[in-house]
Amino acid sequence: MIIGVPVEIKNFENRVGITAAGVNALKEYGHQVLVQKGAGLGSGITDEEYRKAGAEIVSSAGEIYERAEMIIKIKEPLPQEYDYLKREQIIFTYLHLAADEDLTRMLLEKEVTAIAYETVQLKDGSLPLLIPMSEVAGRLSIQAGAYFLEKPQGGSGVLLGGVPGVKPAKVVILGGGSVGINAARMAVGLGAEVTILDISVPRLRYLDEIFNSRAKTLMSNKYNIAEETADADLVIGAVLIPGGRTPALITEEMVKNMKEGSVIVDVAIDQGGCVETTYPTTHDNPVFIKHGVIHYSVSNMPGAVARTSTFALTNATLPYVMELANKGLERAVEENRALYAGVNTYHGKLTCKPVAEAFNMEYTSLEDALKGQ
Ligand SMILES: NC(=O)c1ccc[n+]([C@@H]2O[C@H](COP(=O)([O-])OP(=O)(O)OC[C@H]3O[C@@H](n4cnc5c(N)ncnc54)[C@H](O)[C@@H]3O)[C@@H](O)[C@H]2O)c1
Image (spheres, rainbow, N blue to C red):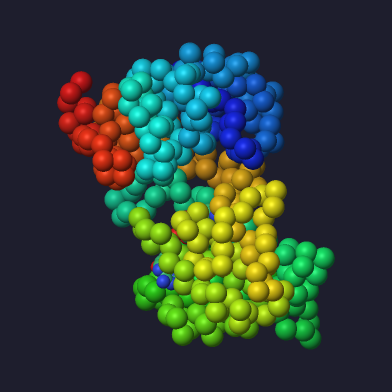
C-alpha cells in the first residue's frame, strides 16, 4: 500500500502521524511511505531520519494526497485540505466528526473512508488511541502546576516536594482515570502530599493498592471536594463522563475558598471542564487568575510536548496502520473489531451512529455499508 504523511497545518500542531520506526516497520512489509518535507520537524524528526528509514520525501501536500492510498495524520483535515482528498482514499486521524458537520458532509460526498482515532474501541470499552494523550496530559499537568506555583509566575511560591524540614505541597486530583493516575504518579514521585477523589469504588480500591500509603483516596462528593480543595496548593481536574459534558464539580464558591496563589489545572476542559470558573486557554496564553487562583486550562495540552506525544501516539496507532496496510480495509475491519468501531465514513455512508445522531443524518452500519460493495 502507498501511505502518505502530510505536514500538519493546524495552529500550534507540532505532532506528526508517523515516526522513523513506523516508516521502517511499514517498509519491512513492502509498503511505500511518502512523507511531506519537514513533516516531522515539530517533533524533532528530520527528513534525513525518515529517508534513512525508507521513506520518500515529497515536497507538496498535493502530491502526498494524489499518490497515497492511505493518509496518516494527527488532526482532522482543514478546509484548505478538503480538495486534496479523493474517492476511496483512507484517512486515519483524530476526526471528532460530531463537532464538524461540514467535514462530515465532505467525507461523505467524496466517498472517503475516514477512520477516527478517537472511536477505535476495544472490547472492554477503552479507547486505545486516546489513552496515550491522557497519559501525556496527566503527567504534564503536574509539571505545569509546579511551574505556575512559582512566585515569578504569580503562584504562592510553594515547591511541590518541599525540602527536609518543610512541608510538601498538597495536590488534589479529581478523577482517578488515565489522566488522574498519571498526575498522581508524577506528584507522588516529586514528594507532594496527594489526594485522589473518584466516584468509582473499584477504581479507588485499585488506586489505594498501587499507591499504597503514598496517596490518599477519597470518595468524590460535594462535601469532600470542598474540604480538600480549600487547603490545596494544586488541584487537577481529571474527570470524564463518557459521552457527556463534564459537570462543574468544583464550584465558584469552592474556588473563592482556595488559597491565594494556588493553582488549578483543569485537564477536563476539552469536555467542558470540571471547574465552574475555567474556560479554554491556549499554549501562547495558558493561564488566567480568578479569585486569586491561577487557572491553567489548555484544551490540547499534549501539543506542548509534541515529541513525546508523537512517539506515544504512534506507538499506539502503528499496529492498526500495519493491519490496514497489510490486509486492506475490508479484511482488517472484519478481523479487528476495535478498528471496525473506528470507521466513521465508508464509500459515502455514515457508519458512526453518534455522528449521524448529532446531525440528524442517515446512519448505515458498517456491515451493511461493506455489503453494499
Ligand atoms: N486538556 C487536554 O489536553 C486533555 C488531554 C487528554 C485528556 N483530556 C481530558 O481529561 C479528562 C479525563 O480523561 P481520562 O482519559 O483520564 O478519562 P478516564 O475515563 O480514564 O477517567 C475519568 C475518571 O473520572 C471519574 N469520575 C467520573 N465522575 C466523577 C466525579 N463526579 N468525581 C470524581 N471522579 C469522577 C471516573 O470514575 C474515571 O475514573 C477527559 O475530560 C479528557 O477528555 C484532556
